[in-house]
Image (cartoon, rainbow over all chains, first blue to last red; front, top):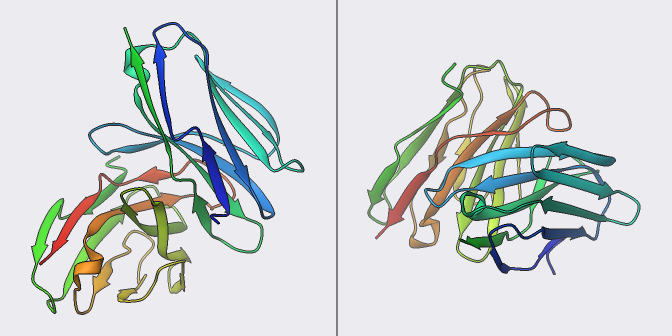
Length: 109
Length: 113
């Protein structure tokens, strides 16, 4: 079992819908990254958080370290949001990142 | 700033050949790392470094070597390529792993025949 699990694996939404992607982990972590990978393959960092909530534009990320869960929300989704979203946990025990398998999001117009 | 520069973008090797994937960053980041991405498995850590002269193994280090002689450069060496090393490789850097944004290179697609 992977230490970092994401759900759903695939998600199709209509433009304008509110989207939630979940990330749970089974070990202690110090912080968590949310990343976006576009169809061309490039990976960009969206958020790094260790507690509470962060917001950037239409993207919101939340984390509860004790409950071992983080969520990424997209409000008013748009076709340009179509991408793979990846969570990556920074392990408490070292300088190591463990990644979820990713959520493939497709937003239809 | 160029960010993280990875070369080459594409490479085809025969089994047993060796090669080096180059990674350079111009942001004075201490943390650098190499990952491989395989279908359905997500990114997996190969090796990482927390500063010049310091390297350590990640989740899947076998068949790969790294060195960090300068803050800027973190090359990944395949000593004797195997078909199982066919993958997309990403280099990433960060000021410190627990602090700050991760910056990724554009990726290198390697095929081993």
